[in-house]
Image 1 (tube, rainbow, N blue to C red):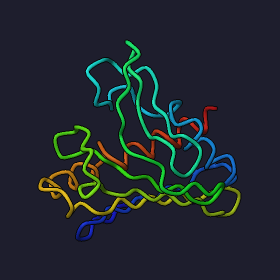
Image 2: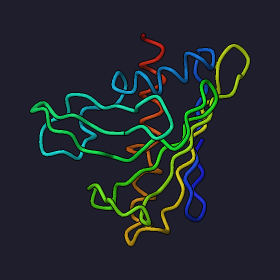
Image 3: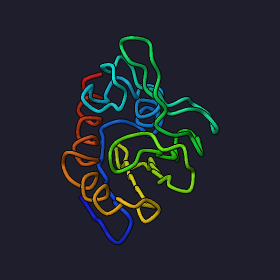
Length: 157
């Protein structure tokens, strides 16, 4: 399901795992499902990380050992919520100006034998190219495809 209203993108998927496992796989095993093509560093992506605590880094490490920040962990409340600050601009480059940051909130709610994973990406109005970026992340090449990949990887793990 997709909704893109104003400056917000909403995506959700139900995965076949309890909330504890769904949360852990999304955060602590982020690198296991994040596509290698989705990186901002000059070097090819070796690993991608969400540090498991509020105030932690959200970043990538290239095959050459270089690191590029993507943002930060704003809230880390296993197994229910992770909130991330996204500091990428419309050109897919890191922007250190916090006034331009968008926010991604992911919640994990029990749903029968599985978990409903809801992702909300908001704050696109903060950046000059926000509407273009919002359109890109709302499509199947954005959060829709990423959540599908997450679900498939979780099921295979």
